[in-house]
Length: 422
Image 1 (cartoon, rainbow, N blue to C red):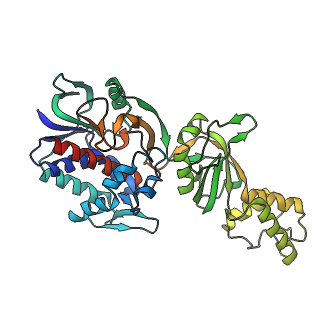
Image 2 (image 1 turned 30 degrees about the vertical axis):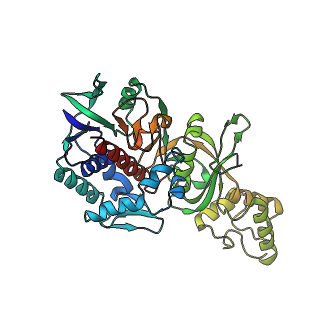
Image 3 (image 1 turned 45 degrees about the horizontal axis):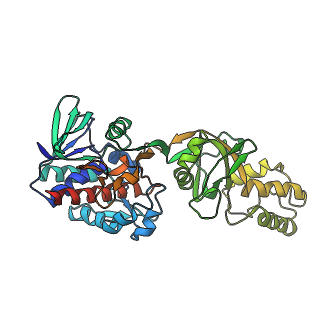
C-alpha cells in the first residue's frame, strides 16, 4: 500500500512527487509512467533548452497568458509563483537565465539539466519511478483508497494524483469517475497558407498585427468570436510574424491560435486571416503617407524605394501584388494603385487552409472541467483523495514558459495538501 501514487512521469508529476516528499519525508510515493522514458516533454521543450518559466512576477499579469484558466490561477499564483520556481532550481545548483523576451532557461541551455535535477531529487528522496506502466483501470475502494490496474500489475494507494497531460485514455477513465471532460482541441499551432505573395519568402520575419474578423467571408460567420480584448469582436494579436514554407508562424500567430483555439477548430481551420504588416498605420493613414512620397520623390521607382520599414523581399512582393510594375516611378503610379498597395500592407487577406503543429510542443485546450477542482489544493470536488495537476486540466497558455509554470504551481499546491494530510 502506497501513501501517494502519481500517474504520469512528466513535469507536473515529478514536481508533485518531489514537493510531497519535501513536505512529508516519511510518505511512500511512486510515479507511474506509461512509457519507457520519463520527462519526454521536458526534453524537447524550448528547442531542447527547456523554457522552465517566465520572468513575470505579478500574479495578475501572469494569469493574462492563459486563454483557459486565467481566473482560476490567480489564487494559486499568489501562493506559488515564478520566483519560487527559480529558488527551487537554484537551491539545487541549477542556475537559470532570463532572455530578452522574459523566457527563462537553465544557464546550460540544455533541458537535460532540468531532467538530471529531477532524477537526482527523486533518487535522494526515495521516490519510486515505475516505467512501462500504462493505466488500464482506476477504482476507488469503499475505504476511499485507490486501486490502480496497469498493464502488468495492480497498485493500491491512499491518495492519487493524475498528471497525465493530454492523454485521451486517461480522460476517459477520469470521466468514468464522474468528472466532466471538456473536449480537447489543439492550441499553439501555425497557419497553412498557399499564396503567391509569400510563396518564396521563407525566413522573412517582421512585427505585424494578425486578426480574424467576425465575418471572414459572405458565407462564414464565427458566432461568439471574442478577443481577450474587451469590446472588440475579433481575435487580434500583434508581435513577430515569421513566413515559413507552409504559411505563417511566429509568436503573434501562436498567441492568436491559443486564444482562438475553440473558434478556429469550429471553422475546421479554414478562415481568412488579416495581416497588417505595419501596425502603426491604418489603410487610410498609409495611403496619405504614400501620396506624400509621390510628391516628394516622383522620379524614384517604387520598387527600389525604402520609404517603409518592411523587409525588402516582403516589400517587393506587396508592390507586385498591388499591380505596380518594376519600372514604375512614384510619378507614374495612380492613386488607385497606391490604394491597393496600402491595402496589401495594412489589410492583407490570406485564406488559411489548415494548421501545422508548432515544432514538437503541442498543447491542448481541454481536459478536466475547472469548476470541479478546488484550486487551493488541486483536489477533486467530486471524488475524495483524488488530485489533478498540469495539463490534464482544462488549462493552457501561450508560449513563453507559462505552461510549465502552471505545472509547477498546481503540483506544488497538490503536494502541500497531500503532504500535510497524513
